Amino acid sequence: MSDDGVNTELRLLLGVQRVLGVPGALTAARVLGAAGEHAAVWLAVGTLGALADAPRRAEWVRGTGVVLAAHAVSVLAKRLVRRARPVHADLRVHPGPGGRWGMPSSHAASTTAAAVVFGRLLGTRATLALPPVMGLSRLLVGAHFPSDVLVGSAVGALAAAARGTVTR
Image 1 (tube, rainbow, N blue to C red):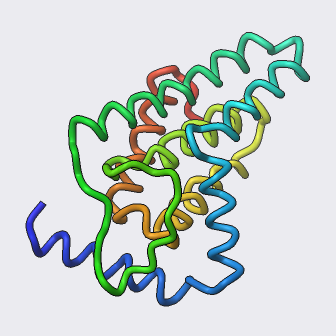
Image 2 (image 1 turned 120 degrees about the vertical axis):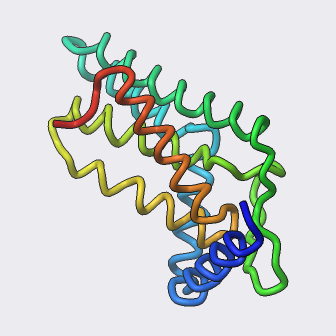
């Protein structure tokens, strides 16, 4: 990415932090980040769905596999792309367990995959509100550039589509 592209993304990131970075939002963003680490919350939701919905247990297990696959692809892509996380003197970075590389956002990938596959299983599109919330949380804590989040969401959507589970 060109320096102009990085500068534009950095300006967007700083703007999001300036406008939305109030204490309650930062706390919520940290909680979402912890819950989404290694797709933990979505793997737990899928497991609970499989346990609670015996007639569709196999569908829940497959859906949870899609979430895990989206997460795994994003982790592998980080190692191939090797794009560093944002760094700037004005950036409010709230450290977490994340590694050095940020592209694509694994939180965005697993959340998008979960929103699509679990939304279909639950018969609702309301779950599609989850990826933008998780994406904003990643910006609020300074973990990612906006394009990291967008690419992560695309990875999750593609994983769901590859499984044929896109919400109708």
